[in-house]
Length: 139
Image 1 (cartoon, one colour):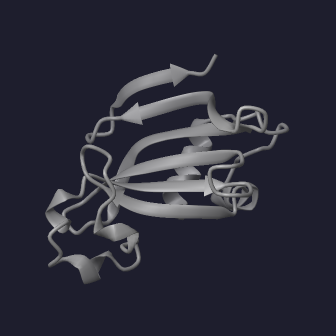
Image 2: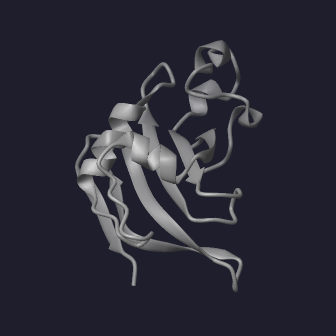
């Protein structure tokens, strides 16, 4: 996972949160220390009642949801869950349920007044084969 985060850090230059320099995964973890993870199906629905993680996915091989895995979703926050600035990373998974390649990443800035997170910077979505599928620049 740290290798994937490091790759992410090399892909983007992010300045919306006080000109931080994201050159390695430790800086991302330092900036966004609180997080949640989930496996999701192709429609974005949660799988395994949110009990499966990258570390324990092998325990769920016989679970009815295992064949539905589309991607692994990682949301990390500066502070409170859904109430602070955040980074969102999604990974395609291999046949064993392990994250194998990046699917999408983006950052959100939390607005206290509206109580919502808004996309900041650039959102990049990749195809399963690693080619860029879309690039969305926040306005």
